[in-house]
Amino acid sequence: MPPRPWSPESWRDLPARQQPVYPDPHALGRDLEKVRSYPPIVAPGETEGLKRRLAEAARGRAFVLQGGNCAERFLDCNAGSIANQLKILLQMSVILTYGARRPVIRVGRIAGQYAKPRSEDSEVVDGITLPTYRGDAVNAIDSELRGRTPDPSRLLSCYFHSVATLNHVRALIESGFADLRRPYNWNLQSIQRGRNWDEYRTVVDRILDAIHFMESFGGVRPEALGKADFYTSHEGLLLGYEEALTRHDPVSGRWYNTGTHMPWIGVRTRQLDGAHVEYFRGIANPIGIKIDAKSTPGELLGLLEVLNPADEEGKITFITRMGAHRVEEALAPLVRAVVESGRPVGWSCDPMHGNSVTLANGRKTRDFSVILDELTRTFRIHREQRSRLCGVHFELTPDDVTECVGGSTVVTNEDLERRYETYCDPRLNDSQSLEMAFLIARLMQGEADA
Ligand code: PEP
Ligand code: CO
Figure 1: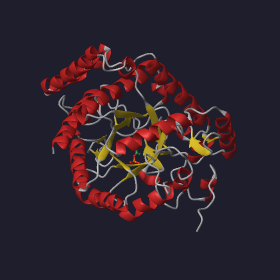
Figure 2: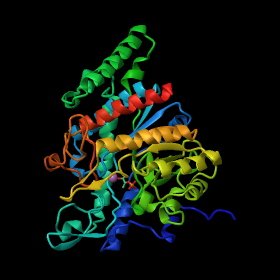
Figure 3: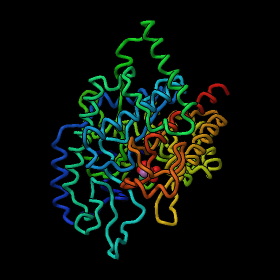
């Protein structure tokens, strides 16, 4: 059977989950029309560049670090927050490069991660039933019905906050912010308080030695140390908005989502016969697909057939988020089936979303050691299945928040009351993020020796 024709709006004929209900559909149409008239945020050439690099990662020649907020907030669209977010990802990527002995591809959950899927449509706050918060692109987090009502003008704000954020990221990178030789990139105060600092300091010293050694040899072009590639990603959830930023590229004749380099499909919207998969099958971007323990081998093969029938390399990244206690039984059969199919796939691990727990006081948290446990097991399972884990995916922040417990600077359950700021899921803080990078570097060196 020939495939059904695709267009940026063909998803509209299928059931779309997780879409906000707007009280005024005309206002929605008008605002989406405005987004449609605005310029693209990213260019197809950059997006193709990322796809090529992801293909290298899947072949073991690079490693992917994807990370950022669970829910980006409009109020964090300022110079300091953006620079710090970039800085933590750069620092982690250098540590990972050291561990992986491969270049690291940096992909932020940034410049568009403003929409959230939710398990419940409503919640009771102070005795009033309110629509749940679905991200700054949809509604406000405050506890009033007015703010919680989905407002389409927020899609315009979503566009402009994405543009402003990416503009600042680009300016920082162009002006040498990513230069590894600059000492401010190695301001590691937060983790220096931790009990494992001596071990990590040895790694930092070795990295700095290596940089100086290469420089003294003149074997490295200055631009290789001074510039860094950086890509954006967000969950492609609000299909009207994604459609409005989907543009035809006259050079290649293909359609691109120009709102981000790498959109991903979340676990709640990856139905083979659903609107999200329909939308994603027509765009040329590299795409992520979140995979949980409910996924079956047949489903993964079905997704590959629909979303990448031509077996383009670098196109699909399966981002697994099983939960540490389920990963052994859940992941191996999926990896085996994909390996046997011979289809090209990149595998990344999101060790955050399968490991959330809600404490008695209602706080949602994640334990550093459980996160590391899922990662450790995932590396091993891929090795046993003759596959390769080629990336990691984190929810993290450069701020000193107390949202995830554990780590060598030790955040306890009691500390969660101190600085719990996320609008959605708990994130690793600055020292936990750096420590995680050191531990993954160590894991990867063990892999290389195995
Ligand atoms: C997320 O990445 O914030 C998210 C909602 O993930 P998942 O779709 O894996 O639950
Ligand atoms: Co999340």
